[in-house]
Amino acid sequence: METPSIASARSLRNLYFVRTAFQVVFAAGVITTAVRQPQVAAVLFLLYPLWDVACTIYDLNTFSKSGSARTSQIINAVLGVATAAGIGLTVFHNPILAVAIFGLWAFGAGVLQWVVGLIRRKELGGGQWSMILSGAQSALAGLFFVILGLKDKQHVKDIGGYAIFGALYFLIGGVLLSRKLSKTATTAAAIS
Image 1 (tube, rainbow, N blue to C red):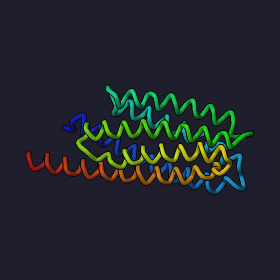
Image 2 (image 1 turned 180 degrees about the vertical axis):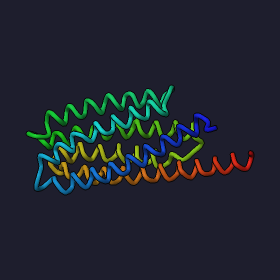
Image 3 (image 1 turned 30 degrees about the vertical axis):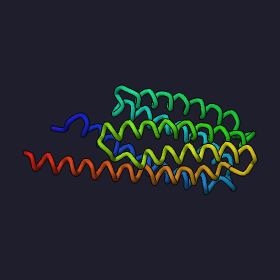
């Protein structure tokens, strides 16, 4: 019989792998459409924070049942919805401002992800360093998107690179959780 913590870790691992695949496809879509089909890239750009909200809600329903991690994720979901609204209002007529709005979201979401990673590191006994690093990298990238976006140095296509880094961190997080689950299963089998 699977314990709740093992089931939660397995669910989280699967979420990380799904996020990896989505972010790679998203990055490819944004990078390939940004120059020749900017309207398509703008729609993809608008969808990115909504995808994060959907993943956060799934995570809230399957893993974060209480505590500080849950609070951080609820704040992240609200921030993501507000960001999508801000991007939707600006991306088609003022993409520079939309990139800056995205940067604010990336900063806030990164800080919140960093917090959740630290909390989960304690809850899961490790396996979260990639999420901690991802949160820190997201916060830093967010600052660059705000500063450089407002100076017209960052563009919608640059979000593709941000998504690729995110995919790499989620892939590493999924692999680390897979290893942890494998060790747990081996230990449980040896005890039985």
